[in-house]
Figure 1 (tube, one colour):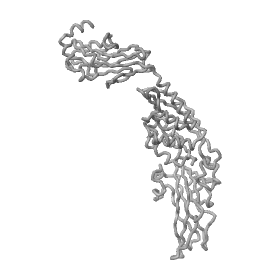
Figure 2 (cartoon, helix red, strand yellow):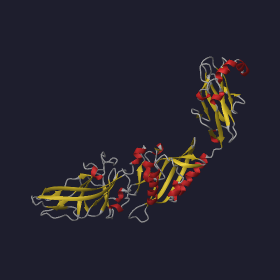
Figure 3 (cartoon, one colour):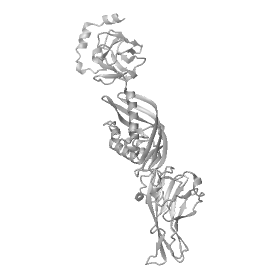
Figure 4 (cartoon, helix red, strand yellow):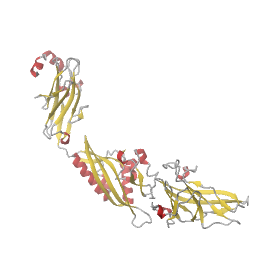
Length: 482
């Protein structure tokens, strides 16, 4: 068959073929014209060869049973494809590829590691026409694959440097072309190192995959850290577990960290600026992060990087609430109207605009009101009134600094009995109270100095003006850590 096909090729045809300028011929054209068959598709080791490269590097892990597989599809405008011939020595010798009637073909061979070879493909149809194999020649070489091994070694090296809080050593292993923000990664590392101690991360690698010069490591992790906790000796232990991935790129002879998906295990304080994707399997997991105030908390992993960028800020609402009202001094019981922390109109001044769920929660509402019992008017110096949503519970934390309380109990048994709707709870001025509602945790402190005070307007002695100020911290994600 082969000799018959070659005998039908005329000298005139070859002369016309060779007259086509080489500079105008793309590799995939293979002398593409109406008088010659052509290669419609070609791939090597599973890689679609769409662009001409100076030297194509194939790695040993891309072989199948130690054989490099070349596949393709040949087409012709007349007759059908009669044969596909493949050379791996620059055209010195050709061998037949396995050919299907559709024109699909397959050829495999075992290249020598680190020895360049030139792949050429010649297509012949049943009318005697043929393509020019030199027009689509591809230089390639087989390399011993160490990328997976090198990436895994780098992964554990980064983990060790992170545990040692070696920022400079860590960043030396990060690519200058890092896909996230390098500056934010540095800031995230510094915040992690300042606020987390006794870092223990146990990874479990599930997959190490290679694409071109990049290697992706997918892994699960169990993390245990000692988190900063003002007012708590030695801090408190926090744990979390989830799944995520990292991408490494070969730069010269070394691998470098190129990208990280959320949830992060490095630079958790800057997740939104550092992560470039979110591991789908981690969505909804409770994962560790560090707030702008330096507090370690657990938040729900969001579905997008945009959601990840503000999940730390949205987790804890901090502010001061001032309640002012006036009433007739003849009233025996003077009570200011309650103001809900998550539904009042003046959200913008208290940083509620960027808080997740702050404007659309239907339960777990916390309200406060000032309460004065006076006839004749006197100042209630023992406390103010706090009105809670049904099924909320409350306890005295024993602290007077609201920022000193970093976590509260999640056990309802540690709190007072559930409070019915509109019940009044007296709070001692200056003390910090913890509240657990059906949907969130909160801290509240009535500030001393002017709290629950009133004055008589000189223009209307029948009216009393009440003033009360509360500090609050609200944990929106049902996390008892503040």
